[in-house]
Length: 236
Image 1 (cartoon, one colour):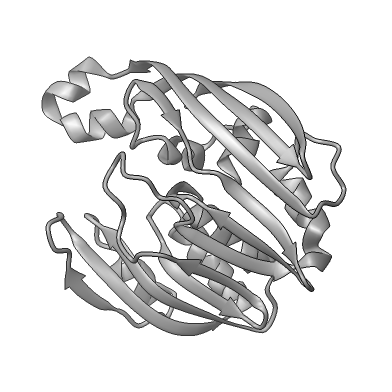
Image 2 (tube, helix red, strand yellow):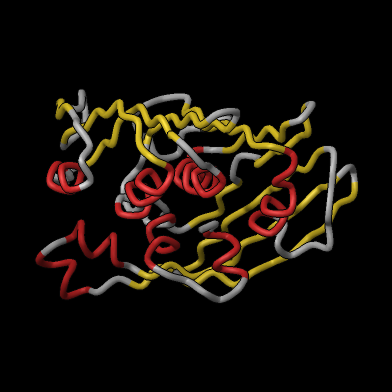
């Protein structure tokens, strides 16, 4: 679910690879991932790359009816998949970008909402979610330009009763059980990109998307003022 957790646990899959296809060689200081207790809730703020992650995480906590509203911007056709899920949509053009954006405004059971998110997880899901007191809010309904800052691009609210699930998902490499505030910082250092040269001659875009990026992730976790540092090998 959380691509950083999967890297740390050496369980790299397609979703992890997809999270890094926007990156070339270099050092990338990412936006802070912040979580704070607020009354009966736990509020979360994160950069663009956590949009799908938080959507899936919050949906996993929901029961009852889930409202999903927003867009899925893509150069591929996802209309058939949305129809198979019984979701109505409007396909509109993307201004200044290739492809279409699929606008949806629907209410689904929690199981069907989770199925939609799982089936379309490889796409950028610019969707707001609402389910009782649980919510996800996306700042913009279009993908940001590569390299542009995306501080607090996505926000989420869950119950503080779900603290154990949050810790398991996002503070997986700590001994933390509870907190008032945590801040997670990541720096991606990509030293090398392995590209299929033959594929690059016939389909440069596909070659870029399938390329393997190598380097390290520097991770700093600050929980109620206590700082912990980790480093993980990156090969995705």
